[in-house]
Length: 451
Image (tube, rainbow, N blue to C red; front, top):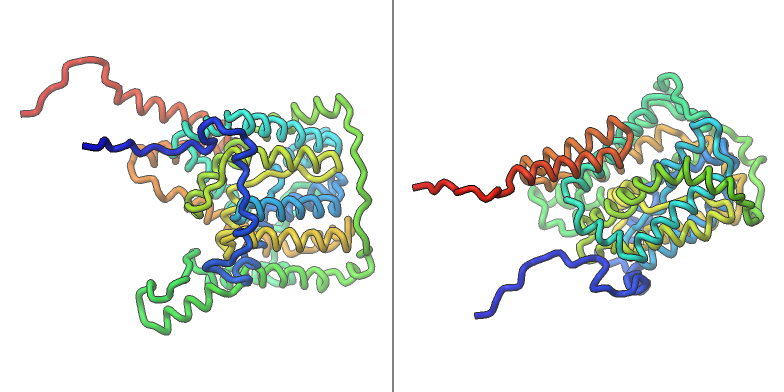
């Protein structure tokens, strides 16, 4: 009789293969629209801008980040990751570095921000190339990963509600008075955007096969038509139009032509300060949310195209080891960005490739002057987009099937949210998981036999 082979998870690193062989090559299939449309991919392409725009805008206004350079480099990153991974793999700002740069005195200089990105990238590249990241991914309990995802998703959702309810000063990193009901960035506009997104996208279901939906035929047909509308793209374009209505002088301030590239001068003191103040708090967040959580989410959303932790880790390392030297914003891949892209229709790499093409055009046409447009973008609309991305990420935790798994996940999420630290929540989740397993260890006693 043939022995059954045990079902084990195949290590994402493979069987001691070189790390460069783990980088996917899906260029031929990433742009192939199997069960999706170009409009769906366009809708998904703006699904992560709720987190991208506020951080980029704040760094540009406070830290003198060159927006044109950042747009061009992140555009190239988007195009490359879309072709290589074949899924809407996002390119997001490194949030912890950005938070330190704009809120902790003394503020980090641009060279120190770049040094923080280079330090983080070096660690992630080392972990990916040596296989240590794959080792971590295999042995971290799923409830702990789900706890990190839940906390990050809820954090996005809480921030989104603040964007909708209150005026925001991204340059000062402060929250203002309650948002008025009327106006071009009022509550009515934000709530209208949310209602429109709910009507068109529902709770995020797809209706690729109308016959699979219960109910009358015309209802099924209506739901299919609504889900095919690029709702997020429409909301984003309305926001862009409103920028010019809010401040017509934008037309005069826009300057044609890209920013001039230059290599930053990064001293040893910049490297030391950037690593200690920026990279040290960013590294745990990047490992957990930008690599481990995003790979797990990619497996949930795209089982046929699960992203390798080695490829994702190496990708983050290479992007920043190139772009940061030219003053581009430190970036990573984020589970929240992937959830947002998917929530609004992104199903292939075409979604981020289209986003990259758009960024590249804007960066080459307007350079750093494009910040005038972003500075007037209705924050309530950003909150609407961010809300759906956060909820989509949080819903990844719905597969906890036992009370023990849910217990670990919720404690991990609670600590992460309360302490504002994914690393602290992760450590508490691991300790709790181990303690629960120790309770079940057989200490060698004689078991009672039920009659």
